[in-house]
Image (cartoon, rainbow, N blue to C red; front, side, top):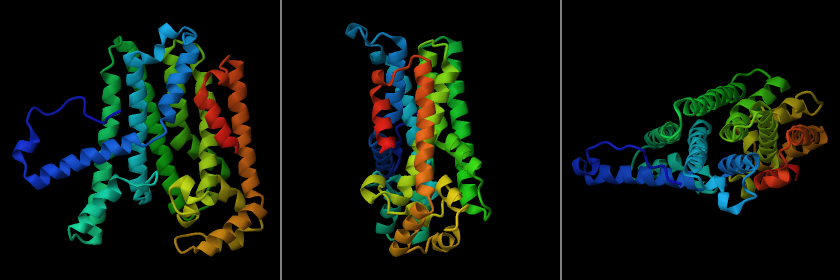
Length: 345
């Protein structure tokens, strides 16, 4: 899957630009394509496999519905949307690494530094590349849907689903940063809502909703509910990893979320325990490796880690119960089995 634009300007930019400027544009497109190609493809796979299960045609190899060009185009759009959000998330979190590699903003920051730019100017260039790269990926995602050879009404339904997912995810990201910035405790109920908005809506609800819509399934809302609970479990698992998992799993320093003082459900629960006074003093950008280890111990001793694990199990149970009630068997959807195994570990 590429991030090449659907339409290009008539003029050839390289013919009117200096060698340096042309190289910068070429580098930008290369970095954007690499950002798009490194993922696990969870979201498009979820869409394709749920669509295939709902269509009931995969039992007939000669009718491989997921190979239809328009179905692949929707899957492509879903992954482009994910790429866009990841790029912008890295800019917001000041991260320069993604999946073990220098990301687009980190790359251009290094380019600027190697050219003699100040740290502040290099940071500005990196953020500029990240913001613009995310915008291009988002625009291309919507163009993929708008260009589908479908009746207007069906195409409009798909675009509306994308628009709703984008809007809700943006609000979730804002609330996530707000909760980490404003010095006021975030209620546990809010942390769950933020997880639903920033992760579940576009990563799980959207693919399952689109699959149901494309397959003309009557249980669109119920399947969206499956995605919502699955997405919350996924985000809570990610929050646990952000505190306890090694760099080989997260691609970040151990305890990165403690350093960034993220107000997750894990922390919201710990705030209700006797461990909070000591834990609160440790959190923030000055936390040391020993401080991370102590914070991990406190979160385990206080029962907050165990509470998170139970929350994950509860959301997975609801998701799977709802799926079975609507005749969606996980055995027909390999990516769901992979996710369930990973989230249960």
